[in-house]
Image (cartoon, rainbow, N blue to C red; front, side, top):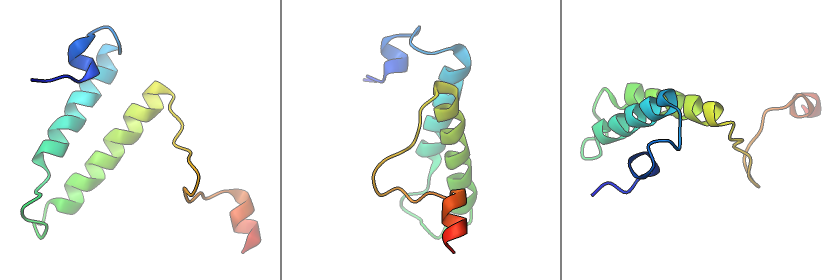
Amino acid sequence: MNNDVVSIDQDAFSARVRKNIEQLAALVRSYPLSNPENEQVQDIMEKIRLKFRVITASLGAKLEYQGRPTSSKQDVEDL
């Protein structure tokens, strides 16, 4: 049974965001958990990261939390 918000409330997100969420889910399902030496691991992981960034940007979500490394001008100036 699928209880994700996309399945429960079809109007919760735009069609574009729903499509991106479905694509992210497919990428996660295709990740080779049982074979970490699979040559496609890096490629799939990069696609997952990019899709995640697309979704969070589309939703206007900010990925800030205590302890998250940042790269800001101040960090560069501190070097």
